[in-house]
Length: 184
Image (cartoon, rainbow, N blue to C red; front, side):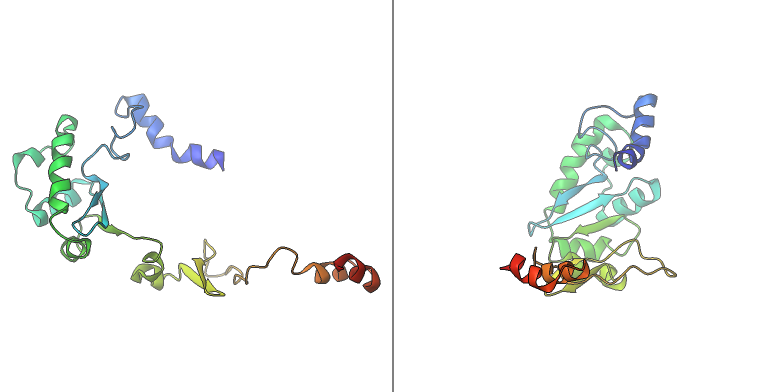
């Protein structure tokens, strides 16, 4: 797992080597430093994720949000990021998350709702992908990854520790009188 986590950071290490990534948290392109790649609160207290890094997505986001101020013209001008972020944050606070999703969610803006634990299993995309299953009235992530030719086993009900002791002991060939004494 640590090897995989380190490998996922390869791009960040490349950025550090080139001087475009600092060690300061919240100062970089994808760690909340860039105004076009962050999460924002909406008027209803819910949140949106904005990830319009690519120029075409950033341009579409600006068009739909009517961000015509020259402040937003130079997307990668890092000294402008704090002022841009402040303006975008204020803008998102003017409408509910549902209103913003209606405006931006089905367009090439890279905007998506941040879903809570109850909303995520009911999201149309997650439903279409069978991302969640419910077992014994407990909603949980489905096994992943899912392959077409080698499907994962269907999850089973969670057991309470010890509730299968008799079965396990019998499978191991422990004599029935000993099983009863152990359980007693």
